[in-house]
Image 1 (cartoon, one colour):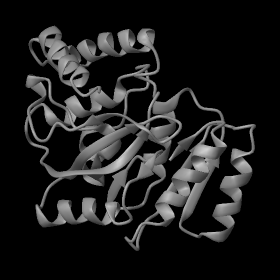
Image 2 (cartoon, one colour; image 1 turned 30 degrees about the vertical axis):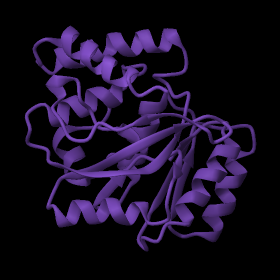
Image 3 (cartoon, rainbow, N blue to C red; image 1 turned 120 degrees about the horizontal axis):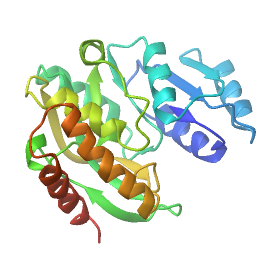
Image 4 (cartoon, rainbow, N blue to C red; image 1 turned 45 degrees about the horizontal axis):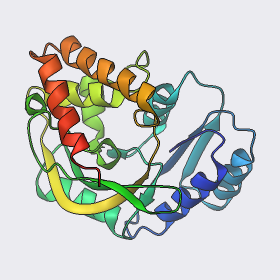
Amino acid sequence: MTTCNSRDNFIKSYESIRRQTYPEIEIIVVDGASTDGTVDEIKKRADDNPAVKWISEKDTGIYNALNKGIRMAGGEIVAIFNDQYLCDDAVEQYVRAIEENHSDGAHSDLVYMDANGKTVRRWKMGQGNIRQGWMPGHPTLYLRRQIYEKYGLYKEDYRCAADYEFMVRILKDGRTKLAYIPKELLGMYYGGTSNSDIRAYLVSFAEGVRALKENRVKGALWITLRRTMKVLKQFY
């Protein structure tokens, strides 16, 4: 989990994790030196729960914070979570999908929610190919630790699309196998770094093209346009 002056969202997300039925969850919290009471809430839960590890310090951005958290994590399967599970056995389903399919990771469908919990759009892409504009919903991506060890972490010089670049990097050659769960297991708060406004979207588009080019995937502009069309179709 990454936080920065997001006390209420942290509490909701933490409680969502605590309701999960999977028994062996390590909770890593990387806070960006919050000043709104978030740190007090993190301390309170860490004192009560030995599974919580946390730090609070200035960072250079969300991808720097994510990399810190991944380095701190001790589990075999690593997930990034700042949102809401839509059922109490979601983590159990992700882990089971990875183990039963002998895969490197798993992903599922996703719901984007506004501040009132209303669904804004759905992310439902199933399985596919990066070169056809497909990509899994990053908030639903559960990966074995060995994938990070093999391919590296997030590139911190990206503003909005380091998550996409990372997925291109691990999926472009077809060697990373993901199990797909055709269910909406997770709700994401709408308004992240890549979808907060039109300027952020334009930056994300440009960085998407850059990500493909840096990974030597041909047809970067065409692929990015196809990906954009797939995303636009998800809006109500």
